[in-house]
Image 1 (cartoon, one colour):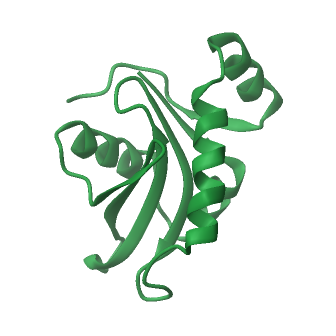
Image 2 (cartoon, one colour; image 1 turned 90 degrees about the horizontal axis):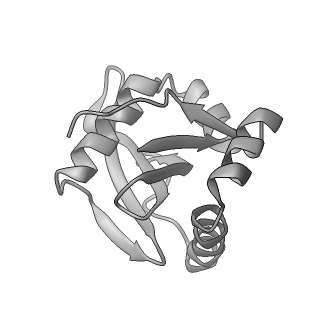
Image 3 (cartoon, one colour; image 1 turned 180 degrees about the horizontal axis):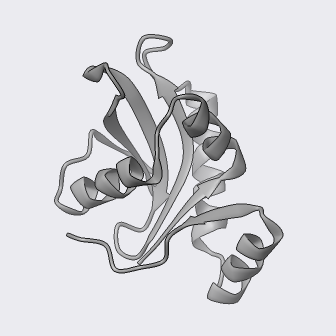
Length: 127
């Protein structure tokens, strides 16, 4: 299984002190059926706590995933700043999800080497 962050998401997560361990935990919860919404087009929404705030006033993560072996963190927002994503944003995120999930292993590796995608430790994650 491979987990990735887009550069945009990585900057957002760093600003909100969301570390890779929290992202791994989010994927583990998704794999166990704990996700907030399936938005269609291989896009899901997952709620996580922000340090010192808890889940209710935490953040929402948007991932592109096949729910099997590829998870891409592509967008995040604080619930206190906005309620949800717009329809236009969802359309764009679905297109991005399609593009990311269609990448071959070779192209994924190239994207990581070039810094287009940041890989979260490639290891076996707990289920």
